[in-house]
View 1 (cartoon, rainbow, N blue to C red):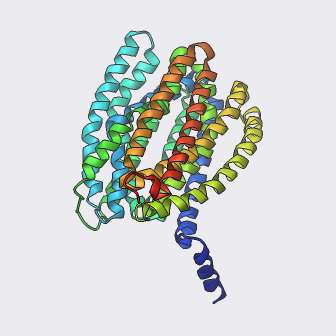
View 2: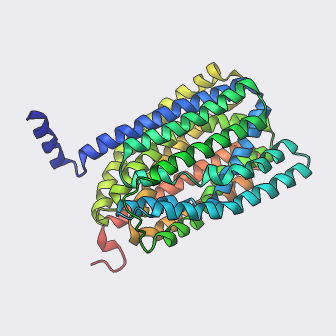
View 3: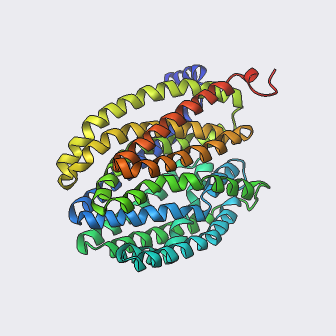
Length: 421
């Protein structure tokens, strides 16, 4: 009786479904923690058992593959979450078919780009991209089952599927890296297992959908999000592609290691997005804006502590576990700050995406800020090398958070909106 009364009392003062956030958040944090451990194992093996040039080439090609994800209509996944949250479960099948069809263009682009690089004398990267074209559609277009499980709020199943896939990919990559220590076998092992594991999970989840209904605006909304995410997809990976093109594979390896180590901070934003989006779409706009404003203050304080701790801890981790990459130590200090700002930006983006009347803010943000980030990186890379890329991302992230926060305050007060009373 006491436990139930305490929970009821807590609900009177906390305007959220406490059990939902505690339970769902626990599963997602467990998933993220395990994924982080797997990522750390992968980074440790690649950072110590293969040469920096091989690690750099692997980072370069996987970054190009990440940019090519724009051909897979990634916005369809966000549309699947929204549709499934409203009961339209047929969106998983339709969305996957659209993504597979569109990804064939990405495969053709990879083949063409790989051939071009090989002709320019960069055979290793060129052959890697050309070989990746075969597996690309199945590796990068079949993960819609995670969006479906997120929309259904089945966080246990989401965690199990994601961890099984991540564990399989990490195991394959690590084993091949330890045995062969060559770029192309490591890359193909990663892609093959990614494609096989995602396809298997998709088939299992698809057999359990409860209806075949699809809401009218599903494809249009997902396609629009995909188009608007083009610049975001490019800028997310363009830093490594630009560094690998302008500098060398060894420098890229140091930069990529810094990104991998700060991904733990960024992943907090992914957890908050997965947990909050299905709930946000059901809450009235002004009320949600006021609730989120209070939560952001607490989140910001917590992120300051996380950034301070990481700035002290991660350089020691590099010196101890990655002695070949001490060049990465000054990089990681600045990138922890950028990663913390990214978490705030993700939470704010989730709010604007969840409210149909405010999609224009999300769309504008998805176009303007990635474009500014990409432009700054191209302008500063020649003069400042890797630091030009780091400070481009840091400055744009800070501006992004400031402007989105001001817009949130504006939304929280209806009289400030056009047409408000």
